[in-house]
Image (cartoon, rainbow, N blue to C red; front, side):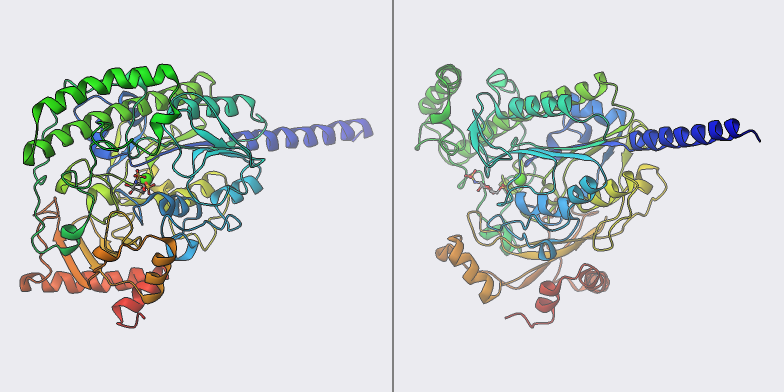
Length: 533
Ligand code: SGN
Ligand code: CA
């Protein structure tokens, strides 16, 4: 062959190789994950809510899949985010309660993706004590953050305030980052929303958006917790724990929501006063007590909560529209989820923390046209722990052997109907402000078996040091609860002591022990073996 022809062919080969390598890089999907805070799946249309607060999340659900059995492993903000980042249970990632500090040097999906050439960013609520590491970019609100005119910590560790409503500001920052990113690389953007965390403050545009709705009380609103010690001693009920001033913005007690009022601009303050003052005048004139007062509080909670959801949903729409208008829709996996669920009056509660459904289950809506059929409704038992391994596979990486979740790709493709048949759960933060007893347990599609326990002396001392030990209410107990969700979906009848269920309980205990081993839960193993000190 002629020398020139050979040279030409070589050149052609090299340049096609280059082009292929480039297009492979491009082919790696972008990742957008929106992690909101305390967003109850019950308030989302795609999960059956009738109030129309989530048109944009519902649209995403129609374009992709709704996961109806998505679970967290420790229903609290920081711990859940740490599990999401590391795909490891709290005892292994070191972040068991909100007083912990995340060791940012440990491997996370961000460290793996950044190393593999992704542009990675976390914008918004982080709540992990330390600053993000291994992200190409971050801008986070300190701790819980503020609803109005929030502060942000920048990468140079400076803190600055940005005026506006937090969810709108986080969307502005996210769009801005997307606009200015390096388009030669795929991206992974995590948007950490503050909404819909307590004290549920909507954008001024949404004040009163649900005031025409009379929200029905959940059937178990007046639960009196027979046979359920943990529920009885828990302190997160609307009747007694929820405060009129702090939570519901009535001036009956001092201030509200962590100094939010003092941060308002004059015009925000005017919106706020105009709206809440007339509600307060009406409230005062009614002289409510007892059940009438509790039910009034429930209505106010729901109206503020749903309006906050509406503000959040509009921003989900904004960011998804940005992705679509930029032509990124086909090659971007879009995930909407929350750090955990939330009680909207079930058992008379707000807050979360428990293994019971409204807390342990979290919304999970995923759109990824390359793998997920539109209008999919999937009841596979999936976990937030599965998100990081899924990212690894999407990026063409091997799932690290120490990640404890499983990639969801077979679930996306509808190929694994029995993806997982049980989920292990472990909650620690006791007593702190809501007095939720520590517990671990197993959740299958049909059953829940839970072991509540007395924490070790070491844990008790840690709580004293953190200032989260409330001595008057400190009275943990060692006992079990068992529920059959088929007969009792609300988890009201603890049947652990009923002999007729002993065979099922025995089988579940065996499965629980297996999971404890599989997930390296030495603390839970020691409790069951009666060896905890
Ligand atoms: C705050 C809230 C609690 C809530 C925790 C944890 N109190 O402390 O009601 O349970 O956060 O929530 S507040 O008065 O500060 O609003 S988490 O989602 O961040 O884990
Ligand atoms: Ca939360």
